[in-house]
Amino acid sequence: MKETQQLILANMAWAAEQHEFDPEFFTRQMKGQRPEFLWIGCSDSRVAPDQITQAPPGGLYIHRNIANLVHVEDLNLMAVLQFAVETLEVNDIIVCGHYGCTGIIGALDTSATGPISDWLANVRTVHADHRAEIDAMPDRESRVNRLVEYNVRAQLLHLAATPPVAAAFAAGRKLKLHGWVYDLRDGLLKPLMDIDAQSDLDALAKLERVLL
Image 1 (tube, one colour):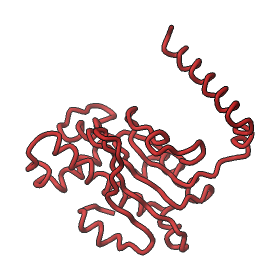
Image 2 (cartoon, helix red, strand yellow; image 1 turned 90 degrees about the vertical axis):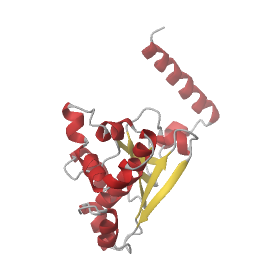
Image 3 (spheres, one colour; image 1 turned 60 degrees about the horizontal axis):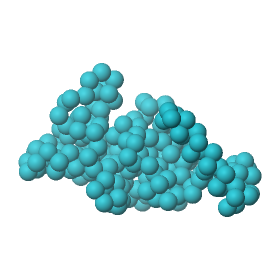
Image 4 (cartoon, helix red, strand yellow; image 1 turned 135 degrees about the horizontal axis):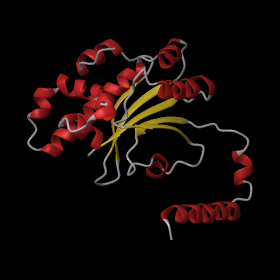
């Protein structure tokens, strides 16, 4: 059996199971979405936000890209962010990286080429800002994972400076940003940083050596 056929069969089984367990499930889905969180994560196929958080359908509004980067030039991300903040009115936004990220590896050892290399320029900047500490780590895995952490914090600060988030902060919205890392080795999430309207972004940016 072809793999794509298996996906269709699995979908049919899932739909039947959902309907049997809760006959009104799909009827409620048609009434619209009201997620509590926006999740900005890595595209890595091993990191499935709904699964690792056990979020129900409609609980997470999700955007994913290689190395969970926040670029104001990324119209896809900015459209997702604007819709999540202004229309869905989410109160929590999560930027989640993961240890062993192949995007971070590609930026660290400069193995990435073409569009991927261009995309990862921001990560190389984060590495350059923390090169002494990262390069002093005892092994490659430690260097990659430390850069994963620094990258999450840098992207969270970039997120805080985007127009939709800045406007929400200025309006007194109870919006909070969270920087997390997912550990492939044990399946656990590790909180790294939180930002809200009261946070001193200039002080945090100076500490993290991030240009806002």
